Length: 399
Image (cartoon, rainbow, N blue to C red; front, side, top):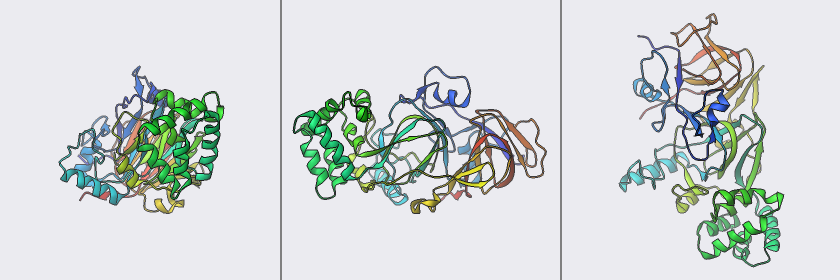
């Protein structure tokens, strides 16, 4: 049996507590589970590999990797959040490889809840909002901006509880010092967080502090949030989150495209494992001017989201295409296409578009809203109707 060009794939949404009820199903126009649906993983990552639908030479994309002797260099997710995710950052390739090897040497099981590095890979990522009002914390503000808010809240609090934090921020290497002081914990930090929350009540400008305090009472991450840029995206707007960028998604729906890794260093706003020392090793303690990723129109109705405008993204082996009409697209390697609105058809160059399921090379596939297709190899394809595609370069060999 020759390998088909188009293979329909599917997966079960992950039911993390922060997910929106029927969230993924609602975004994709499908029947929901009645519970929280946080993420739909479409890729080969062992944590939740996409499964094939219909007759295919392999049951999952992880099996495809093993048979092909290649690694799919991206993971595509549909993310739908009703509440805040953890404050987090991701390592560089070198940090991931070293951290994974170190934890292996120390005998920490891969499934251990306190393990930081689940694999030896980096996890650069971008997200494109699927609806207006997608909120995130992304990158540090300048010390000057932070101090304006700290001083206002300190005055409202009418106490000196915020003074130690302010002193750390105003001193040498203020971002690192202020962050370290908060995550170091202790009675003084508890008092500062409590004063911050009390002072924010009723102030629209500090609504996020009140919201985070309701979700994670007493968590130092509430104060860390004041150090970060609060960003709200309209549908189609995007953020780029390279290694070392501290961030947290707050609520909304989006398409995430990232390296095929599950390495997350957390710093708060979560019941999961927090390793502040390891997080500080990977963080970039510089103020972030603007982490928006501007799409580039590469053809009529075809926008490319790729971090080529950032030096740190020059070698990222993937991009996300948003196609809003008929188009011809050259896919440089195995790709995943998903219909988030309407439906679409894919046809190999020279084929006639028709209704059908997964087919052999040279034919076509029609996909309803919410369905996804794996394109198994480089191809020139015709696209009709509405689509979001992740398009990587050629996969990396498995070492």
